[in-house]
Image (cartoon, rainbow, N blue to C red):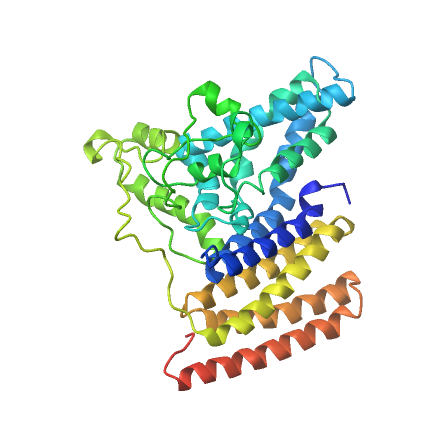
Length: 410
């Protein structure tokens, strides 16, 4: 496996989440909600899995442009530092345009949907974002920075941004003038009008100060987006904005206005439909976070399934390069089905019961096919069968118990 700082940092991410949970417990502050945190991590899992396929596009494009480079930048400590600064500069513009172009916002909005602010939010990433942002880095290939080093440095810029997703760290003195900090990034996640589209920096906040997008943290932000997605389904949260765009485009009469709607700022509409929509003020006295009631009886089942999903994902990310693309596609599909099912259970959705039994059947069936047709290790076959049978029995019993108490998952 290639040395990927993001994947190798996963244990550190979960360690920091654990520390933040301890701070929550001892400080009596409410930093986490189980349903929101699970969805955040589910989106991270989904993004890492889909990036196996989508990231190829960005890396291949960078490598292709590199073949036509103007120069060949030598590999040394100085050029490594220069590349780090250059990648962060490109990240600023890619990130800023992800807020200022409606189509691009659909890939990035996932990261802003959480109404909490904690380390788990850092893992909440959109699966489609890379499709719109990879082109911002291509000038670095044309200049002559090595593709392999670029991928590594880009990962470091991403890893840096994990620690700034917390409310447990206050302002940090002189560092606030140079670096992106938790205080600066809390502003970025605020849905208050004065905080919208501010502080786009990755590592160096100087870009925002230079280009007029900086905002100091004043009152505590209200987190989330102006039109909450209201879902714990990691698949739907990635598609919701595009579904909304499609519905709006059908109502826009002019073809030229349809194109403008796609590439103008989120909230833009033709004049006859009201023009640019104002950013709504936040009524802090009446604002209530999306938090549908779920039955506590499902929590042990959901958490067990979720731990299994995380373990399989971790093993898969470290071993996927030894498998063919179609094998990877089958495994990715099974993991995504699992986290989608967990999200549905936390919302008491009617489709969950048949979906979960179908998912468990497919899990056993696909592993069986992969064993006999693709020489998958034999020990995975009885393990998959045992998993499917035990999970199906547990889920059947859970449904029956909930029905007897007048609450059902279906």
